[in-house]
Length: 94
Image 1 (tube, rainbow, N blue to C red):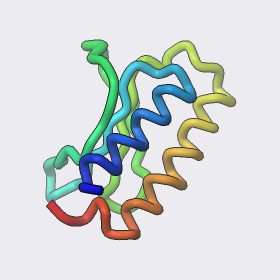
Image 2 (tube, rainbow, N blue to C red):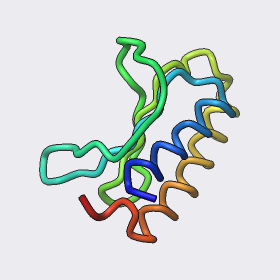
Image 3 (tube, rainbow, N blue to C red):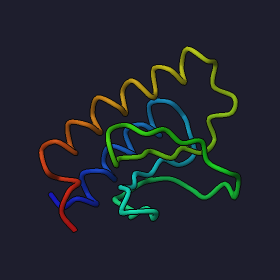
C-alpha cells in the first residue's frame, strides 16, 4: 500500500466514524507542508489542525458541531493510527 493510500484509508475511516467532511495528513518539510493523503469533500472553510508527531500533521474540516468529547476521541484515534503509520515508515517516503 502506498503512502497516499495508507493515509487516505485512515482519513476515510475517520470521516465515516465521526461524520466529519474531510480529513487529510501532511508532513512538515522546512516551512512547507507536503500532502500525504486524505479523504472527503471540500468545505471551503478553514480546517482545524493538530500535530500528531514531530513533523506529522492532521487537518480536518466539518467538525464544528462535534461535542468536545468526540473531538478528543477523533484526535486520539488519529494520533494513535497516524503515529503508527508514520513510525512504520509509510509516511516518510515520497
